[in-house]
Image 1 (cartoon, rainbow, N blue to C red):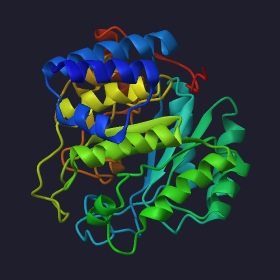
Image 2: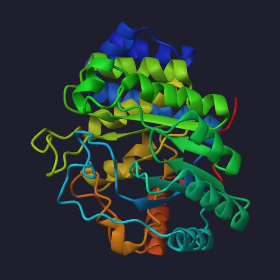
Image 3: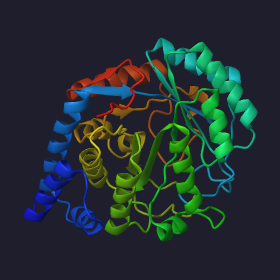
Image 4: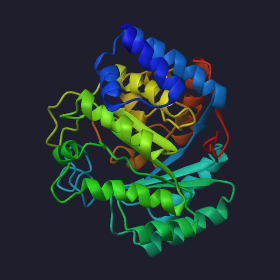
Length: 350
């Protein structure tokens, strides 16, 4: 590890700020010593705020229809091989009920951008979930909507919203998305969500095509400015039915390193150890926790649709029952010194 790398990691921990060129240097000069040092510091910082608690979110993937054609995504509109499905309101409520029995106190409703679910349908569903499970937080992850729609969901009872920005570089964004999609609109959506009052999560893929240390540095600068409550990052994994099918996957090592840097940048950030991490390495989620992550999101979707929500190839946890999935994660986190807790898992304000 270069002396400059060590000093920049220490500066990030103490000041929670670096210049763009400093982030770029830190990312470009990653080695095993830098990874180990960043992870050690990140774990200390996380323990000061969250102890060894890991928050669990119950993920319900309720539709894999999507109007968008993102070049990296397995449920992109033009993938004719995708087996499409939509869950009914009753099925979604059943997933919540099962999750509640298993100790979940946050539900994450995730889908492609599916116009079948109108604002009226979604607001009615949100209201029913909040009425049935008033002590639970409800997170939406359903893409770009109008500010009016976001306001309606919030007024109906939604607490949080996840919308990955994917990259903070407009030029890089254009290489990952069709021309019909707008980088500026994606960023505007995130600011609208914050202004309305949501706890907001953004995030990006690590190792996506055309990504460079510079574009990753821009991601770090964006997160520094935006101050999200959550940040979901995971390695890019190619899907066989996309234009990026032959692109190399992102690496476990770079993802873990960036998790640690994000923890140092914003100590109270809610950071998931993602399913994609567990997909590229059997112990990926445990390693994510040791690098600074403090959230896991097991799948509550009906087992017969899990294989259909395939954003990337070889996704794990497509067959386990929800109870098995939850029990497995408990044991996995305990094996590395953390415990999954029954809690809404709100951000701790400093």
